[in-house]
Length: 294
Image: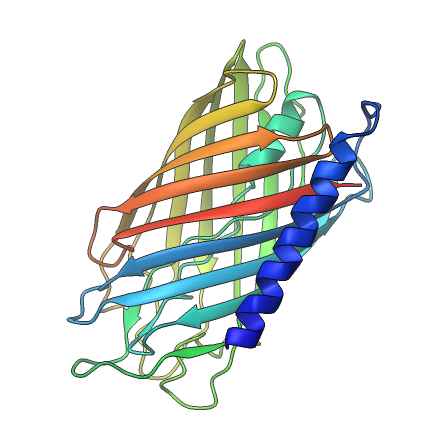
């Protein structure tokens, strides 16, 4: 585990150095990206309706390809660590649009898919289970900008995703995934009003029926607004939630503050801090993601 975390931290440092060195060159020409890569670390902590606090670290590598300025195809490959396997925090992982993409969208570019949020379904009650870690469920996504933002029209981007059961389920206490295929469909909309951006998205998520977990299909949503403070910095306030994803879970709701800092026209950093409202949401969380558009 320590070796994996150390390797991941080194990768982040190298990624940051690459972004910084890029900024030393002359300003890049405006163009649509043909591909994008992002590397992130997200932390969440909560009891999720149990007596045990579970700390989760989610580290996704996201690669996105843009065959056309409107079409994007992406893959998310995560590493997951949980301090306890008493709960499964991978149930609520919907395809959220990376807010860095919304800054790109303002200039007419396509969005970058990314982001995640965790929720939990109890695997039981009692003493704390041992920590668990390993590869999480790989997610493939495809989206299409059906309507480009205009003077009055918002930007509208429908998308689909499929989650593959690649997370470890060697034992029922691994807690890294449900061991089932999931899928979902939704739509994201955003609109700029001078320096103000308003954004919303909604998805319906189909879950595989894992034995003993009481999983349910559920709806998820995100809504919020941001203000372009400078040419490089965009802060946002978001509300994220969902109907309950399992029989023994509650509805999910959290508040999230995000900041997008554009290092160059092709690279940047996204940061966030969150506060859970309901029992099945993390009590608090935060994360940082670095991205580069090719």
